[in-house]
Length: 364
Ligand code: UD1
Image (cartoon, rainbow, N blue to C red; front, side, top):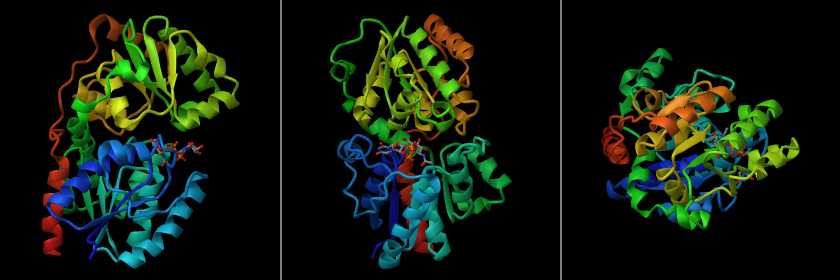
């Protein structure tokens, strides 16, 4: 009998599920893995399964890309028969992508218990599709595992009963710690060691890349930074398409900007570990840079991960060129924020989840 169905769909889910599947196998908890197929490019999906040793998905729903409504609906339609056939005791979802809310909603309506890993994070910005996914998933979850204590206050404010919430730490950092030694050296990824320092850049949020003025200003800022350090830019398909559509491709071919395709986990880890700084709008990279002690400039107005600001190496600048450049100069001059490792970001979060969940299943 399957006790738990675990769901993944998009790139940031894969590094979260890897340690959970491993801890479930040890506990043991009987689990099956469903991949919705939200991300399907080998570089955005398969390579993570190989590098992180994630078991092959038992089912792939192969939904692919579409508008939010169509993608969410497609996942729900495809997931329902899987849930009916398996009749698990509970569904486990991670993070905040469309696959997370879609599968949680199917399960909740069928009376299957929902477990949410990385619950309670809030940017308080409902303009972000992920914020809607977070709030709604948490409302229909029975068990909520949190990565930082700020999430507890957020959930209590939204009326979630405290006994459903467990502070376990950060499963994504479990993966980072487990694989740091295997990180691919920068020299191999770039074909040479950059002679000067370098910034790793990722951008893919709709608010940054879909608006022509914002994207132009961001790319112009990167071009300016490339005058001082190399800019290593693994570009998300959405961002590449937006730059081409908006006629901004020229700004990506400036000297000092090294454009790369989406990178594997171990390549990205190697790039981040040795970087002078990271410039990003990703949620995950804010946490990974804090765990690595590498300064991070987050080109967003808010973060759902405030511990990366209060304890970590993260600084929010918004997509504002002056603020980004001022922070960049500060990092070059003084090394930027030092930070410390947040509580329970110790490589054992998934073990805590598995141990707690075993007790929860046995008690039910
Ligand atoms: C999704 C998540 C976001 C996460 C990001 C990481 C939601 C709402 N957003 O955004 O939280 O930070 O993943 O990458 O779930 N595409 C490909 N190949 C793929 C997948 C996508 O080319 O394998 C292209 C398609 O043109 C697609 C676009 O990227 O339309 C956007 O993909 P989508 O899954 O809708 O959202 P992301 O922007 O990747």
